Every structure is written in C-alpha cells, then in structure tokens.
Image (cartoon, rainbow, N blue to C red; front, side):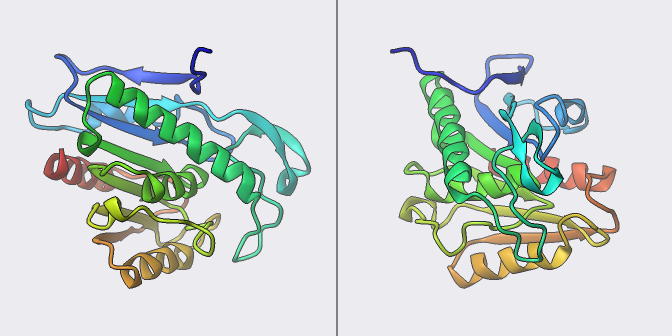
Amino acid sequence: MTEQYLPCVEVSPEHEANAAVIWLHGLGADGHDFEPIVPHIQLPAECQVRFVFPHAPKIPVTVNGGMTMPAWYDILEMSIDRSVDEKQLRISAKQAQDLIEREIERGIPADRIVLAGFSQGGAVAYEAGLSFDKKLAGIMALSTYLATRDSIQPSEVQAETPILVHHGSQDPIVPVSLGEQAKGWLTDHGYDVEFQTYPMAHQVCGPQIQDIAKWLARFL
C-alpha cells in the first residue's frame, strides 16, 4: 500500500536540500499561511532548507459552532486549559512524524530537520517532536500551548533537542500564560528552551522572523 501523506506546499532551496523545516499552520488556515515568510528567512548559503507546509484536514470544530474548517484536532471548549480531542491531536502528530520520515527518505538526516508549528499546529509539533524516535535539529513552538503535557510520552533521544518558544504578549487567542506554562513544563523536564515574547497579538512579526532565521542558522 502506498504511504498516504498530508498534502503539502513545498518551497525548495536554490540547490539540493540539506535540511528541512516542516511547519504546521494554525486553526482555519492552510499550508500557504506561512509560505510568504520563507523569502524573509535569510539563511547562510550552506543552509539549503526545504520548507514543507502541510494542509490540515477539514473537520468540524466544536468551539466554532461545529463549523467545518482546516484543523489538526477539535477544540471542545475555550477555557484557559482548553479541552481538546487528544486522540485527533495524536493522529495529526503521527501524520507530522510521517512527513519527517519522508524527509529522511529523501536524504535529509533527522538531526537536520526542524519541526515547527503555530498555535494549534504548535501543539501538534510539541507532541510529534518530543515523542519522535530520532534526534531532531529542533522544535519551534509559536503562539501555542502544550496540550498533551499530562499524557505525552517523550522520547529520550530528544532530551537535548533545542526548543524555540515564541509568543505575543498581547495574544487574545492563546494567552501568553499558556506559552509560559509550556516553557515551565519543558524546563522542569530538562529541555533546552529559548523563550521570547513580542509586543503583538496572535500572529508573527518582522523582528521575530529575523530571530527565527538566526535560530535556524545556529542549528542547521
């Protein structure tokens, strides 16, 4: 049986790829959401990065009145500790891990692959990245939260994987306290976390993109 991968937008480097960033979008968006950022991520010439932006499947989302939209999992309530469909989240995490495996098959070593996610995609990136069984270059969690902190089964090989956590200090959708909570959990579990906030809402901004580029250049 042929492996079924999530459909993706791909931005290839000028020369043969020697690294990859798999970047998961937020609720209601799609793989094109972060595609325009790629030209602004200025990396050294030796970093030939393939950017992979998967599309989430369209499912009904309870907190949005059951409306069908691109989502990595259902959000059942918008409390501060938001109740989510963990079974769906883990299915999405497995699909993200399948994309990592595909990059490995295409010749990119696991330790040259970064898994990134924004908002809902970040919750999936945490689950998929921390539990993946081959050492990754890094995990990038943007404006997100650690939805599965009570159930995640981290892989020992990720113990020293660098984790970049960014959050908007004025985020009305995912409060910055949830980003800080994730950072606290990660730090308590011995992970190497770089935490940074920006004066913005639920979005990305120019200075942040520059910081992302510097971080990627360090680990790729």
